[in-house]
Length: 325
Ligand code: TXA
Ligand code: MG
Picture 1 (cartoon, rainbow, N blue to C red):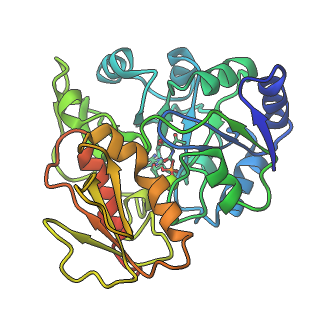
Picture 2 (cartoon, helix red, strand yellow):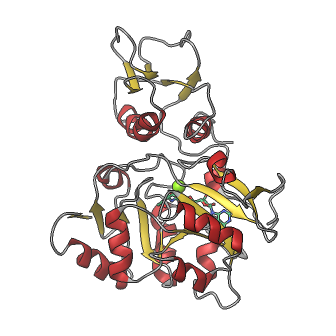
Picture 3 (cartoon, protein in one colour):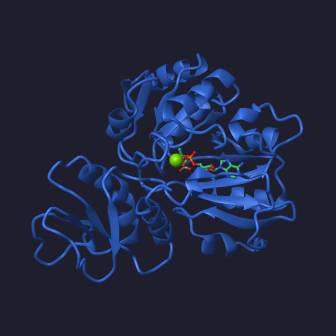
């Protein structure tokens, strides 16, 4: 896998050419790195599933440069338009009805009548979308079920074959995947995955109301980002609040804020418990600890608050701590 440095002249052109030719390119977004392919190229899209070891039942998010492009593939209702105007570009994915003549292959959305779409904010990724003029299908650039990548080296470390290049945009700002919202036919919203943008801030938008709990789309068998066990490192993750009373000497202990006198094997996600910093550092620290031979298990302090991005942090930690069935 080549590393294309974001600041280098020619890097964006090289990435756009590779995508145009049906190759896979890992791209920086403001949430996590994505594994991108030309969304209308079914062969390229299929290789995303192969490279990740991802089941074909699990639909992908398609990224666009503009709302105009989105409206060529999906039905954009007035509620969707409100959300798009307020929150795009940004860490929000909308699940919208596919248009009858939608040119995106069914494989991308796993045969569902809806498509997940996003206009990302990361400047490099936006330039790439503009330069290539392609819709880019991109799941997180990690092997299926493993922790999402938030730095280019995470992609290089865990995806060994089938990726032509990684576009280096440095560490991702938010560090957890986008908030996913389904917009129902009645124009109501339903949270499918918590992320950097909170449901409260979405519902604060005049004209936006929450739908009931039952997903409308009963063709939805799996949404693996929503599987109980996901984002799992290879070491056991154990969650605690207060103090980790059962931690053994070979275990790492991860606190939300820096402890006063940190002991060996004690780590922290932020200096003072700042929620944005906790999310930003979470996956990077979990990957680092996963790679440390002297550490047996990882105890992680669970945020007690569900506010803002901490809802997403709690969600990812719960899944990381759940053994597969
Ligand atoms: O921040 C992000 O969202 C990153 C960056 C690269 O954009 N992408 C990402 O993609 O996290 P992925 O594939 O790892 O997670 C997307 C989730 C999956 O759980 C998938 O099941 C769900 O979105 N999804 C995609 N299309 C859907 C649809 N039509 N209906 C319901 N869920 C859908
Ligand atoms: Mg993922």
